[in-house]
Length: 112
Length: 109
Image (cartoon, rainbow over all chains, first blue to last red; front, side):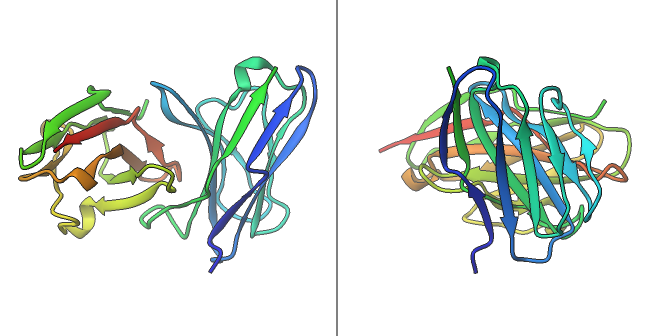
Protein backbone atom coordinates (compact mmCIF):
# COMPACT_ATOMS: atom_id res chain seq x y z
CA UNK A 1 0.00 0.00 0.00
CA UNK A 2 1.32 3.41 -0.92
CA UNK A 3 -0.71 5.18 1.76
CA UNK A 4 -0.26 8.94 1.45
CA UNK A 5 2.12 10.22 -1.20
CA UNK A 6 3.26 13.81 -1.61
CA UNK A 7 4.74 15.27 -4.77
CA UNK A 8 7.32 16.80 -4.99
CA UNK A 9 9.61 15.99 -2.06
CA UNK A 10 11.75 19.11 -2.46
CA UNK A 11 11.33 22.39 -4.30
CA UNK A 12 13.02 25.75 -4.46
CA UNK A 13 10.93 28.67 -5.68
CA UNK A 14 11.69 32.28 -6.38
CA UNK A 15 9.55 34.92 -4.73
CA UNK A 16 6.41 35.46 -6.76
CA UNK A 17 6.43 32.09 -8.50
CA UNK A 18 3.50 29.73 -8.21
CA UNK A 19 3.37 26.02 -7.63
CA UNK A 20 1.05 23.18 -6.67
CA UNK A 21 1.74 20.44 -4.17
CA UNK A 22 -0.06 17.18 -4.75
CA UNK A 23 -1.25 14.79 -2.06
CA UNK A 24 -2.61 11.42 -3.11
CA UNK A 25 -4.07 8.71 -0.87
CA UNK A 26 -5.20 5.24 -1.79
CA UNK A 27 -7.12 4.39 1.39
CA UNK A 28 -10.49 5.81 0.32
CA UNK A 29 -10.32 8.34 3.15
CA UNK A 30 -12.85 11.13 3.33
CA UNK A 31 -10.81 13.62 5.35
CA UNK A 32 -7.62 15.21 4.06
CA UNK A 33 -5.43 17.91 5.59
CA UNK A 34 -2.55 20.18 4.70
CA UNK A 35 -0.15 21.35 7.42
CA UNK A 36 3.02 23.33 7.57
CA UNK A 37 5.75 22.50 10.05
CA UNK A 38 8.04 25.23 11.27
CA UNK A 39 10.63 25.09 14.06
CA UNK A 40 9.08 25.86 17.42
CA UNK A 41 5.59 26.14 15.96
CA UNK A 42 4.64 22.54 15.46
CA UNK A 43 2.14 21.55 12.80
CA UNK A 44 -0.25 24.28 11.78
CA UNK A 45 -3.36 23.48 9.80
CA UNK A 46 -3.58 25.31 6.48
CA UNK A 47 -6.70 23.87 4.82
CA UNK A 48 -8.66 20.68 5.05
CA UNK A 49 -11.37 18.74 3.24
CA UNK A 50 -14.05 16.37 4.46
CA UNK A 51 -14.93 14.93 1.09
CA UNK A 52 -14.71 15.30 -2.65
CA UNK A 53 -15.58 18.81 -3.73
CA UNK A 54 -15.33 20.30 -0.22
CA UNK A 55 -12.63 22.46 1.35
CA UNK A 56 -12.35 24.54 4.51
CA UNK A 57 -9.86 26.96 6.04
CA UNK A 58 -7.58 25.98 8.87
CA UNK A 59 -5.47 28.13 11.17
CA UNK A 60 -3.12 29.66 8.59
CA UNK A 61 -4.90 29.71 5.20
CA UNK A 62 -3.65 33.04 3.84
CA UNK A 63 -1.53 32.75 0.71
CA UNK A 64 -2.72 29.22 -0.06
CA UNK A 65 -5.55 27.68 -2.03
CA UNK A 66 -6.72 24.08 -2.22
CA UNK A 67 -8.87 21.86 -4.35
CA UNK A 68 -10.34 18.38 -3.94
CA UNK A 69 -11.74 17.48 -7.33
CA UNK A 70 -11.16 13.77 -6.78
CA UNK A 71 -11.56 11.98 -3.48
CA UNK A 72 -8.03 10.58 -3.55
CA UNK A 73 -6.26 13.87 -4.32
CA UNK A 74 -5.87 17.08 -2.35
CA UNK A 75 -3.93 19.88 -4.03
CA UNK A 76 -2.28 22.80 -2.25
CA UNK A 77 -1.50 25.85 -4.36
CA UNK A 78 0.73 28.83 -3.77
CA UNK A 79 -0.25 31.56 -6.22
CA UNK A 80 2.62 33.95 -5.45
CA UNK A 81 5.24 32.41 -3.19
CA UNK A 82 6.80 34.45 -0.39
CA UNK A 83 9.87 33.70 1.76
CA UNK A 84 7.53 33.32 4.75
CA UNK A 85 6.14 30.23 3.06
CA UNK A 86 9.46 28.45 3.35
CA UNK A 87 8.51 25.40 5.37
CA UNK A 88 7.99 21.66 5.39
CA UNK A 89 4.48 20.79 4.21
CA UNK A 90 2.68 17.67 5.34
CA UNK A 91 -0.45 16.10 4.00
CA UNK A 92 -2.59 13.72 6.04
CA UNK A 93 -5.74 11.72 5.54
CA UNK A 94 -8.15 9.80 7.73
CA UNK A 95 -11.49 8.09 7.42
CA UNK A 96 -13.33 10.26 9.95
CA UNK A 97 -12.64 12.45 12.96
CA UNK A 98 -12.31 9.54 15.37
CA UNK A 99 -9.74 7.58 13.42
CA UNK A 100 -6.01 7.60 12.92
CA UNK A 101 -4.51 10.10 10.50
CA UNK A 102 -1.90 8.87 8.03
CA UNK A 103 0.79 11.26 6.92
CA UNK A 104 2.81 11.79 3.80
CA UNK A 105 6.58 12.02 3.85
CA UNK A 106 6.57 15.81 3.62
CA UNK A 107 7.60 18.41 1.03
CA UNK A 108 10.45 20.74 1.85
CA UNK A 109 9.80 24.07 0.15
CA UNK A 110 12.26 26.92 0.08
CA UNK A 111 11.27 30.32 -1.27
CA UNK A 112 14.20 32.60 -2.09
CA UNK B 1 -10.73 28.71 20.23
CA UNK B 2 -9.54 25.14 20.35
CA UNK B 3 -5.89 24.88 21.21
CA UNK B 4 -3.26 22.33 22.22
CA UNK B 5 -0.36 23.38 24.42
CA UNK B 6 2.84 21.44 24.90
CA UNK B 7 4.91 23.55 27.27
CA UNK B 8 8.24 21.77 26.83
CA UNK B 9 10.14 22.10 23.57
CA UNK B 10 12.84 19.70 24.72
CA UNK B 11 12.91 17.00 27.34
CA UNK B 12 16.17 15.20 28.05
CA UNK B 13 16.41 12.13 30.25
CA UNK B 14 18.74 9.20 30.78
CA UNK B 15 17.84 5.68 29.79
CA UNK B 16 15.72 4.01 32.43
CA UNK B 17 14.35 7.27 33.83
CA UNK B 18 10.61 8.01 33.87
CA UNK B 19 9.23 10.29 31.21
CA UNK B 20 6.21 12.60 31.19
CA UNK B 21 5.41 14.74 28.17
CA UNK B 22 2.81 17.32 29.01
CA UNK B 23 -0.21 18.21 26.92
CA UNK B 24 -3.01 20.61 27.81
CA UNK B 25 -5.96 21.43 25.60
CA UNK B 26 -8.60 24.12 25.48
CA UNK B 27 -11.95 22.85 24.33
CA UNK B 28 -15.31 22.91 26.04
CA UNK B 29 -16.76 19.75 24.53
CA UNK B 30 -15.81 16.08 24.64
CA UNK B 31 -12.40 15.82 23.03
CA UNK B 32 -10.83 13.18 20.86
CA UNK B 33 -7.15 13.23 21.78
CA UNK B 34 -4.14 11.62 20.19
CA UNK B 35 -0.39 11.37 20.57
CA UNK B 36 1.64 11.25 17.36
CA UNK B 37 5.36 10.54 17.10
CA UNK B 38 7.94 11.41 14.47
CA UNK B 39 11.14 9.40 14.60
CA UNK B 40 14.18 10.67 12.74
CA UNK B 41 13.72 10.38 8.96
CA UNK B 42 10.30 8.78 9.35
CA UNK B 43 6.75 9.93 8.82
CA UNK B 44 4.56 11.21 11.57
CA UNK B 45 2.61 8.27 12.95
CA UNK B 46 -0.01 7.60 15.57
CA UNK B 47 1.31 6.49 18.95
CA UNK B 48 -1.94 6.21 20.86
CA UNK B 49 -5.49 7.50 21.19
CA UNK B 50 -7.30 8.27 24.41
CA UNK B 51 -10.40 6.41 23.31
CA UNK B 52 -8.57 3.10 23.02
CA UNK B 53 -6.99 3.33 26.49
CA UNK B 54 -4.08 1.19 25.38
CA UNK B 55 -0.36 1.11 26.08
CA UNK B 56 1.89 1.35 23.06
CA UNK B 57 5.65 0.80 23.37
CA UNK B 58 5.21 1.22 27.11
CA UNK B 59 3.59 4.65 26.78
CA UNK B 60 0.25 5.51 28.33
CA UNK B 61 -1.81 8.67 28.43
CA UNK B 62 -4.76 9.49 30.64
CA UNK B 63 -7.36 12.07 29.84
CA UNK B 64 -8.03 14.40 32.77
CA UNK B 65 -11.06 16.47 31.85
CA UNK B 66 -10.87 18.51 35.04
CA UNK B 67 -7.34 19.68 34.28
CA UNK B 68 -7.90 19.48 30.49
CA UNK B 69 -4.73 17.46 30.18
CA UNK B 70 -3.58 14.39 28.27
CA UNK B 71 -0.03 13.81 29.45
CA UNK B 72 2.07 11.02 27.92
CA UNK B 73 3.98 8.83 30.34
CA UNK B 74 6.49 6.00 30.29
CA UNK B 75 8.03 4.55 33.43
CA UNK B 76 11.40 3.62 31.91
CA UNK B 77 12.66 5.52 28.88
CA UNK B 78 14.64 3.75 26.16
CA UNK B 79 17.10 5.28 23.69
CA UNK B 80 14.82 4.34 20.81
CA UNK B 81 12.11 6.60 22.31
CA UNK B 82 14.10 9.63 21.18
CA UNK B 83 11.78 11.44 18.77
CA UNK B 84 9.44 14.38 18.32
CA UNK B 85 6.09 13.93 20.05
CA UNK B 86 2.94 15.80 19.14
CA UNK B 87 -0.32 15.95 21.03
CA UNK B 88 -3.38 16.42 18.83
CA UNK B 89 -7.01 17.36 19.39
CA UNK B 90 -9.98 16.53 17.23
CA UNK B 91 -12.79 18.81 18.40
CA UNK B 92 -16.15 17.16 17.98
CA UNK B 93 -18.14 18.61 15.11
CA UNK B 94 -15.33 20.65 13.52
CA UNK B 95 -13.59 17.95 11.47
CA UNK B 96 -10.25 19.57 12.27
CA UNK B 97 -7.17 17.85 13.66
CA UNK B 98 -5.19 20.37 15.68
CA UNK B 99 -1.63 19.77 16.80
CA UNK B 100 0.48 21.20 19.57
CA UNK B 101 3.94 22.62 19.04
CA UNK B 102 5.61 19.33 19.86
CA UNK B 103 8.17 18.14 22.40
CA UNK B 104 11.49 16.67 21.41
CA UNK B 105 12.44 13.79 23.68
CA UNK B 106 16.11 12.94 23.96
CA UNK B 107 17.04 9.77 25.82
CA UNK B 108 20.73 9.51 26.65
CA UNK B 109 22.48 6.18 27.26
